[in-house]
Amino acid sequence: MIRDAIRQAQRMHRKAVEATYDGTCRIYGMKPVKDPVTMVTRQEEVLVQDGIACHLSYSSTSPAAGSDTVTAVAQAIKLFLAPELTIPPGCRIEVTQRGRAESYAQSGKAAVYPSHQEILLELWKGYA
Image 1 (cartoon, one colour):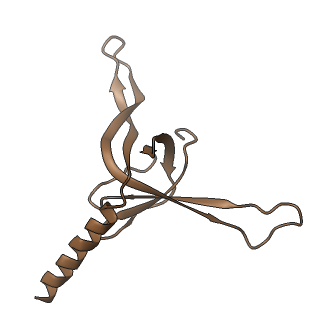
Image 2 (spheres, rainbow, N blue to C red):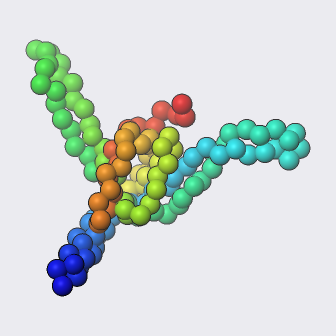
């Protein structure tokens, strides 16, 4: 009985989180691809997952120390998406939200909850 109530609450929470999804993302990764002519295998970017419903959240934080003229501001970018998805480390994540597309890299391990997962992102700078 209690277990059923917990599951129901988790389903309701997931539905509420998913109601905020106003974007989609594509996940790109590097895969070995063999050239049929030269028979040489090289790394090439390929689409791993497409059309994933998501939401981007932004927050800005100011460091404690600053100067009289300049204070640095750091922006935290967080991606919300379904908990069952696995986003490989080192991939490029292209998010389209409100008609704008931007590429990001995963900057940390995903925090996975029953209703969603949160991934901290940073602007894409290329494959390492």
